[in-house]
Image 1 (cartoon, rainbow, N blue to C red):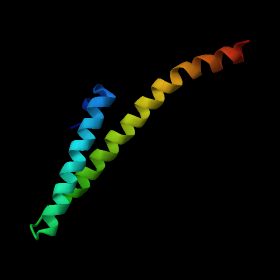
Image 2: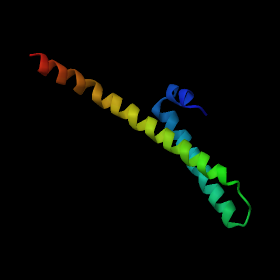
Image 3: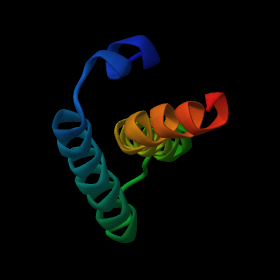
Image 4: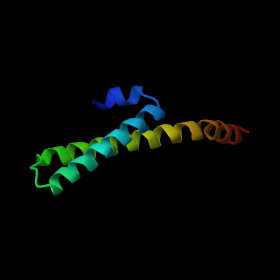
Length: 79
């Protein structure tokens, strides 16, 4: 999924997607232990996708918590 598509989703959907990817990563790990050959690029793709999602969740959470504090900080500077 592209980053623009991820940005349109809300935090709840992003977390669900991250959990699904973590499960997929776990399944890949179990398959590799059972001597089944796994393409190495899959590991990298999933890890990067998880990191992208976690970054977006953090940014969205900071945006919600900082909305009120930004306004109060600018008001105090203007006084």
